[in-house]
Image 1: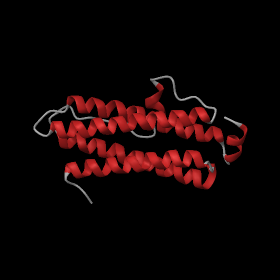
Image 2: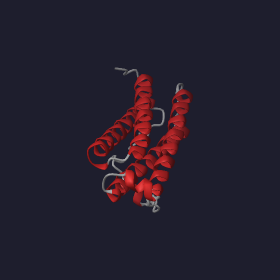
Image 3: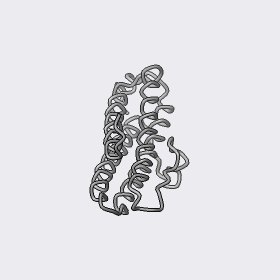
Image 4: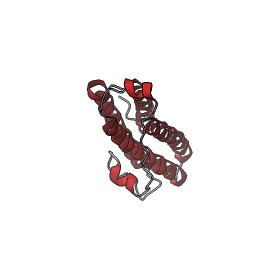
Length: 163
């Protein structure tokens, strides 16, 4: 990271990299499970659910790339051990249903994952506001959280549970 870029980060850069890596792990896992569920979904409404899951998976991949880029800019390295992704993740392991025709169960799992992501990014924004003070990471995290909120709303709507 350049000299001026270091000056604008008002906090523990190593802790920030740790938080970003944990979110990076979450995004890898979400990408994997959403894409897998999209390919495996069965039933009358499966094409609609699969299309939404594939779009969300692409967004999760975008998030993962944004986080990796920021980690590198801060002088860190994204997690490179694939096995470490699960142990470093913030969110609990995704438990997809064994019945791929149970689209409601798939949507419930995805909604839970989105809610966990929203919590993670909200906590990260609070940390950045109170401790970390990094405007660039703030923008990245804020953008990702906005998309996670859209995902939650979309999947709740598909399930018929809009609030």
